[in-house]
Length: 300
Image 1: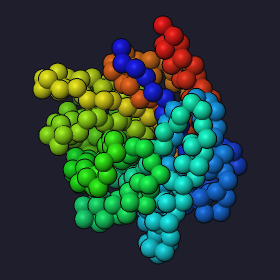
Image 2: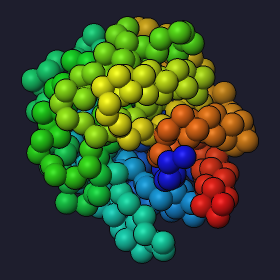
Image 3: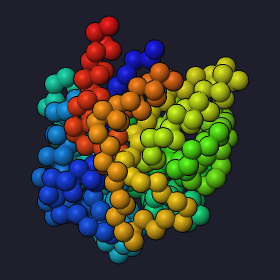
Image 4: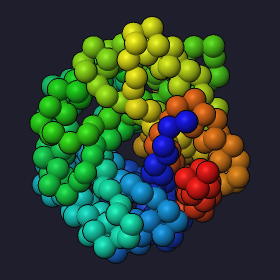
């Protein structure tokens, strides 16, 4: 079984939970602008719970959340500030904690039909360059289509650090896992392998759909005689249907217990996932249980 690394949980919902300023459309950027000490507090809570990788709080540093005017004035600076905050917290951690830079969906989560390749590449490159000095690896989060993956892989050529496309899946259990675009995960894996990718993640999808996605990855890799590193950070949202308007409301959380989430994580690890954390609604208490389980694996 592969060695396991523990990723952090969902920064946005954790900021809301600890009392940071938090509302639509600014989402997690509001704390970054108004009360950055909350951002450091949230990072520290995940580290204290056992996270070995924390993720930069730059998910909302895009025009979709900030608006075009505020992004033009402060978007890049806010992304740099978010990376600095994560770096400042991680550098004093023992044992060593890595920082993952975050490239978020420029045009909103779960909306592959809104993707514009050239604008998306330009803004994503700006966010990468703003954070790259302070991070150890890259997560391109909540990628909803193969077209997005291809465009963002071009952006990742700007860094020599380990980088991962993180696909978001349709929240429907089927025999074949699909991206939010309706394209099959198997086809997305073929695309990444053709591009020379070394790994991929699944994020911001309900836990129930992840197992089939990993199985589809394994099937393609076996046929091609190639292995891929697999990571997972699922959410605890109620299922999200196509056409969801991300800024219209704050999505309902199901409040999985840490033990419930752990049962999903164990299955993902059995199937080959080597990095596991959580997305929206997965709190430090969930990460603590994952870390405790991981410690037991290491002692075996």
